[in-house]
Length: 141
Image (cartoon, rainbow, N blue to C red; front, side, top):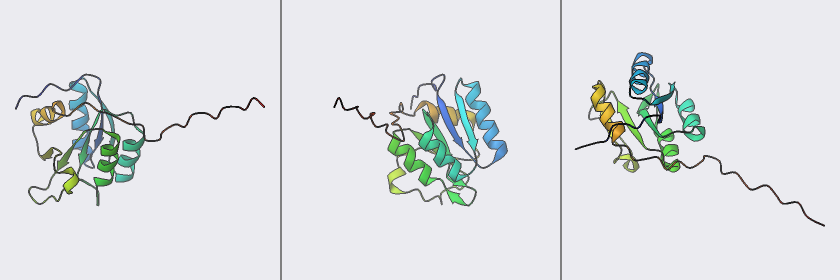
């Protein structure tokens, strides 16, 4: 399968609770001309950035601490932001049906595998988390 290289300047959320791995991933992204957002290590942070951040994609560790990252994945999906799951659990990871099409990379992984997964992500169709309402018109009366 041929994939395009990741696009320069893309903002990629890094949600990974392993500090050293998160730093390595962030370094890879910078080396590839991308901008890592984060890293964040807790679900609450991941959800906040997924909801409010200007993002082109995301890398989500399936398990952030004691919590699963699926709430953040739902937010990204609703906003049209593509993402890749990362996991240290082989075979036994229970991915919800709604996310079965999402690429899953098992740790440890090679840099090239991550690069290919990012290159295969569709372009983000990011919708704002909060839709701004038009300002009310002043009455001429």
